[in-house]
Image (cartoon, rainbow, N blue to C red; front, top):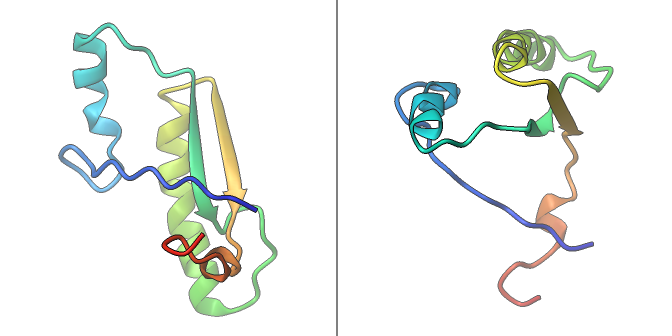
Length: 87
């Protein structure tokens, strides 16, 4: 399976949502948000992962206020199975 990684650092906060003012100034309105490596759709039992999932929910609620659609890509550990340099 091929992967595409796009990295855009946050504009001024940990979520990057505050960068919306820059998009609005350019006349760009986000259609949807894609959240990669999300713990939210998973049934985690480890206390540390549960805490991270709960913290993630805060950011997902904030994203919901900025767009009509949010797509969650569940966390999976096979990301490193593909060699991006040699592929």
